Length: 619
Image (cartoon, rainbow, N blue to C red):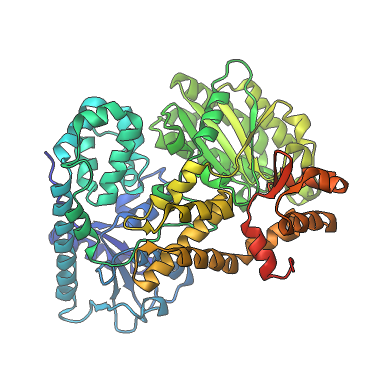
């Protein structure tokens, strides 16, 4: 059975001018039994450096911020790794040793963002010893937490479960669902055998959340095999161990993401959407000509989150997902679009352990070639990749999010290097003749609503999938599952949140986040009626920009606003009562602000009524 204890992982963050000093510190840390992470030693050709660095920072036990008179005042340096480190430090228990500023010379200024953290002056005679003492203290704490995990879970049974029930391809999929596991797997170049892979995964999974993520994966992939191996000592985690793990901090963890897309590593607050993923896969597996796919949904419904988490939703090793953000400046001209799309596909192939040598030989990634003949270069690239996909029994889904931005940069901007209609024709031709590629467009408009070109005539065989409010079960799960130790005084309080939001994912996250913050402020763990009501009001107050968007954009026009006011003021309005607003009613139902149940009309999100009263739109 592998031991969970392993060297303390130390991430070295530094400016380019301090690379020589970083190398020296790294060498000395290795001699002292630590495991430093230095970019030039860990990053391999073909790896996405930003993703690899983010994964390394997130999986580190300690982050050393190396500061000198040259690097400390560099905006890019401070804003990138230091900001990420501070965000992660905020998620750690209070007073835990996680982030250590290290001054390399006496002229180094500690940035204001780090000024509250005690730093080490390594240039002083006793500086190195002080740093070692700090790291050893952190290692001792880490080993204590590892012992708690080993006492709570039957790790030998978990090891047997992975070795006996899953293929190495299954395990590779598991590895790619965790950022720090993915980093080590990338570094190994996919050469690990099954036993070594399992042992390494267990050795790197040393916290409760790590083990729970493995168990959750095992449950969802094969519940019968999971039950037969019984990886818990008890039916659930030992309450005493659970208390020990959280005793360091009396505060509830707040994992909720309000406003930003949910990244794949944040598994706790991404729920549902399996219906969307399954529908996408069903379309891709159709024989004959496959349709392009439009993922349609209103703002803040979770389209981007679903696309970013597609690999975890689908759990299909034969599907390669490539995500493209239409908002990125990289996709606003023909040459940039073709070049960066090719690069993203290459990276996805490498992450799927596909040998790209033939692609690199026949279609080398040349910036000059894509600048001079972008469409022809991309067409050749698709042809070669399609053969590679076919030989490996794989399919590739290219998801273009915020595709309206592509439309915006067409035609009128082409003389300034924008997007051409011919690029869309190339994508359609690829869809029709390269059987292992498919395209998904995601946005808030139907194809017929766009103006630059006639998208509907180019992608005539489009399948529209609708992403909307969360189901009742997923909404309840989002309010109750992500935070351990949180309790509601009455189940009716959960129903109250579901009622006012209608299951809108952004609003659910916003209210849940306020509930946690208010409980932590009071030092409590049970949400009462008064606290939930206050959290709802606080969410309305803090997120006025979202409601402003609903009012100004989704309810644009005096007649739409008038109908919304009628429905908000009068509970139980019948469709027959608002016949002069038939066109507005259809439009607001399409925009998911109103819904019709039987003969009556309701607000889909009754919380909008509270905002209208607060802003005096409803007197």
